[in-house]
Image (tube, rainbow, N blue to C red; front, side):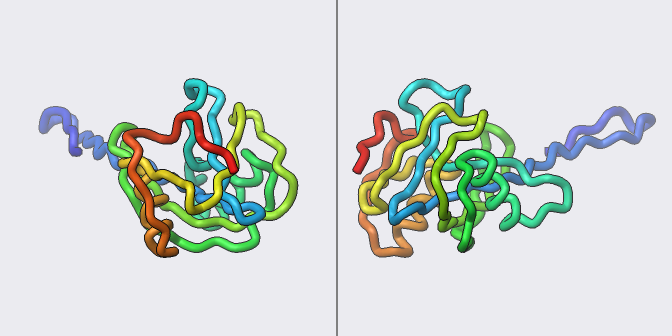
Length: 154
């Protein structure tokens, strides 16, 4: 969206979307969904974060997974890019295989582990990435209206 003041001012604000990354974190054969400390109880989604200036998205994924789960990413594969209109973001989403012992960072309240075939994607932003990732592996799924609440664990 373009916003401009009068012709005499010359200022234009483009309101470009903010680039962010999302990670479908696979750890020990299961997918980790996390709950941010600011989110309601039972609300889980992917590990996400903003790109730093001049940061490679793959490095951003590894950084976010380390900061939020204290895991080392050993393999990263692009799933796709998605819009998150509510926050004016462009999400670059990856499948990230990680190793180590989970230790929550300050931004997360809790996490859940889910077998890939039990994931249920939601119909916006990172949930669309989950659906595409599941399709790429031949996994059937049912849609949720929002990120998972009361996630079934393995």
